[in-house]
Image (cartoon, rainbow, N blue to C red; front, side):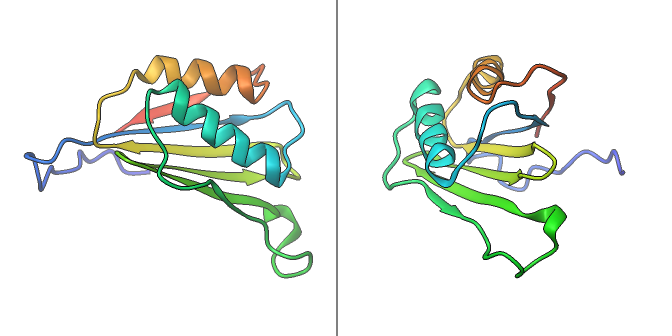
Amino acid sequence: MWAVAMRNLAPDIPRQRLLIEGFYGVELTRESVGAFLAELAVALGSRAYGEPIVYSPAAGSGRPENAGFDAFIPLIDSGIAMYVWSERGFFSLVVYTCKPFEPARAVEFVRTALGVTGEIATQEF
């Protein structure tokens, strides 16, 4: 993995990004993933301008170990994307906004809502 700092090509455009990864401890369905994204947006003080979109490939259309969900909710100030590996109970989530938010609040919401009991890895960029 490389550790090179990313150059800010547009310093006049405010952006805040947070990657959160971990192993979840609740049952995730298409409906619950969509509800989670909508609740996370509210918890961060953001407004969605559309419904969460949650995809799950049909059985047999990919590798079984990668089965799960790909989801996104569009926010007035950007969006939140989530990826779920159901077989492993693993998630990867990216909050991308053009408005400041409190990363610790996002992490605590995710920990509680997804029933994470172990370590959560985070990276702001």
